[in-house]
Every structure is written in structure tokens, then in C-alpha cells.
Length: 217
Image 1: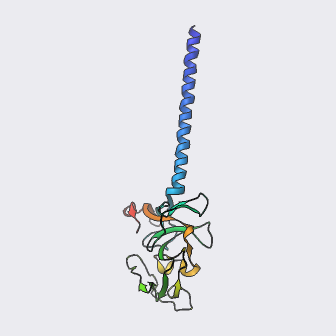
Image 2: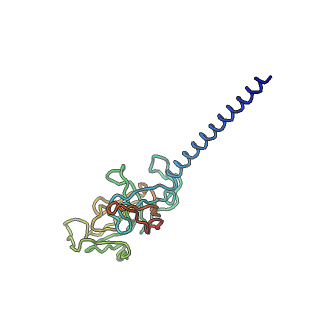
Image 3: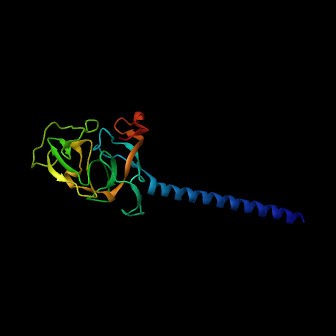
């Protein structure tokens, strides 16, 4: 009788351990699936590897990108299942680099489908109006490259096709962008950058505390 009682207690303890283990595994699976869902459809983290967006974004900034704002895409696809809105002028976007879709680029939208764009001696004109970009555009090279040299400082008037974007880096003289390789397809946009959640200065080997939590504009 005593042995049966001990066995019953042991069986209950073993069952309790299995139940606890099962609960932990289920919680872990749910957490992983939730994290994957958030990364795929809502928010994703990226690191800034180059200075093409200085001084808005610095090398070593870690940013969050809103992937939902432009619509929900099918997994592993550029197809938008639920459209929300298209990128607009001034948005800082992460997108698949047109010449190598395995790479992610980040730039600012300067013109959208239907806009005309022209660059004259570094000044950008959209729909024949100068772009007021003094708050974020940086020019590190005072020299001006003439028409025919390349499109960095002078670009003849073009019209952005529907469904396309013309993007540029805020560090205008040090950015590889639409001036050199053309338009970005709206379907290739991964999301809009909105927050710096961490920033590390590798030269001074320290955190840039003043940048943490800064909204990206």
C-alpha cells in the first residue's frame, strides 16, 4: 500500500515536470514565432555601415524600420498583400539595392512617380521648384562637376516613372544613389526608418548616448 502511494507521488511529480517542460517549450515556440512575425511584417533592426546619410545617420547607428507603414508584403517576396500607402518625398527608406537585391540600402526619397527632377550645380529641383533641404543635405566637396562629367552635381531634367522613386543620400557628395544607378521600384522598399535605438562610435570606442532614442527625420 505504501509502495503504491510512493509510486503515485512519483508519477505525479514526473507528470508535473513533463507538463512544465511542455509549457516552457510552447512558450518558447510562441515567442520565436511572434519575433519572426514582428521582424517580417512590423519592425526590423538595421545597422548603418556607411556615411552616405551623414549627418542624419552616422556609421554605427542602429535603427528601427517600420515595415508595416507601406503595406504588408508576402514572405520572401516583393508582392504587397495589403497596401497601406506609398513612400513620399522626404521619407528615409530601406530598400533592396537595384543592382544587387541581396543588399539593403538606405536613402531619402527626393521624387516620386510623375515628378520631374533636375540638378543644377548641386541644387535639386523637383517639379521646377528648388528642394528645401538645408536642414539635412550636406556637401563636403565645394567643387562642382559640370554636365557630362557625371550626375553628382548636374543632372538634366528627367521624369520619374509611376511606381518608381528617385532617392539620394543626405551626404550628397559621398553617396551612391539614383543619380548613378537609376530609380528604386516601390515594391523593393522594405520600410521607413523611424528610430535610432543604439549608436556606437567605433573610432572613439564609445556609445553616442545623445543619439539613442532619437527619431529619424
